[in-house]
Image 1 (tube, rainbow, N blue to C red):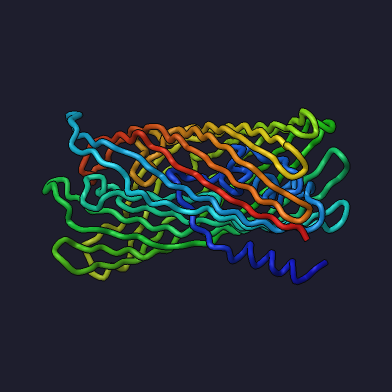
Image 2: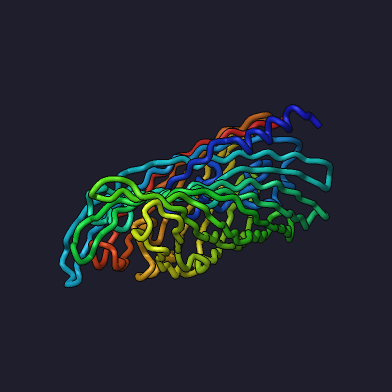
Length: 414
């Protein structure tokens, strides 16, 4: 084994910058090829990003490979706010806050039966921003969840039909929430608050593939839920001046999920993938934050609670890949992602309705290198949700929301 290349691969996977932004919560944009095929990429040949999409498929990698992927996401959207009588009191749009989903992968074939892989990529992330002087800001004017999963992976090929993998997941989240505090009786903002913290937690994944014949294959991937105990800093900046600080604590549970995929090869040049993902979003039932040790005693509440009660949901994807020659290929995909946000659980942190993603891409490869590019358009749709007691509105309507996506990947074989 080339120890220098292994060390370089591990460094790339562990140290790659991870900033993800989209008008959603779950991230599926782990490579340009994956973007191009709508996320339906569980059975790719010789692709190190299989570490993310389907760990059991790293057994399709020959030799030693490294891959890096960079995906640009730019969210756009509009909203309207209403009072208790249903009268419109404000209309506006989000502040465009684009971000990057970065993936780094390394896979090495140990022998004819065993493979090792490691990846660093975001599974959950979001960013949203609105004008600080808007009424929407009483719910949230800046929200960011940065996440990255580091996944050391072991895969075993039992025979020509069966392969499986087990994965340890080291998950990091960094959370920042900013909003204006609204006094419903005085009907005015009394200050701005900021909550910022980070956490590391452990999870696990498992995957298995079964090939019926040379043309048909199925796969299953399970990813465990991950519970973060988040210690954070809370700051309040009263309208009258000064600053109040406190220690904050909260629990954030990232949901478990199942991926079920099917691959069909029409011939040596063309194949089709179908993928269904079930995500247990019901784990996101509340965002509760406890405050302690305030710098000004008796001013802050001990708990800041917000019910969410999200519902579990499905994402469906279809991807097509066609090889024009040994070097050039084209891809296309479509994905439909249900909205899991109920009327009484929505907010301006994640103002996301159902999502339809349309994508295309192209790939060039030779014996040593692969370069792929992809473009996508995510139609986020609309979402209606109720205001909270401390919001300056009674209901909200998010609409005409979309996200622009562009991605590039580079892979090298050793």
